[in-house]
Image (cartoon, rainbow, N blue to C red; front, side):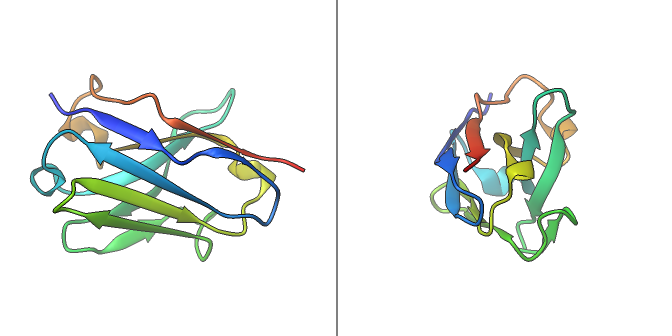
Length: 118
């Protein structure tokens, strides 16, 4: 069973930047497409950005032009560079397979909290 450990979150002012990291316990190349998701209080989890093994990327409209997803298959790492952060980006961020059904629902990590506030 694969495990994910997310890190890099924190408190940042509006307009600031953060870089999130996700370490997987096994090959993300074998998993395939990976994604960052987020869940704000009282809201459903939503897909923020995805990246295929071929490095094709897709982004939610709300983060296009501000967030950049990347992956390092050799290190089993996935990253999310977040710039020009807004208060509405406040959420717990998770990395996981895309679609999640590829792994089932038993492998979600703890996530990393991102809070954007002045």
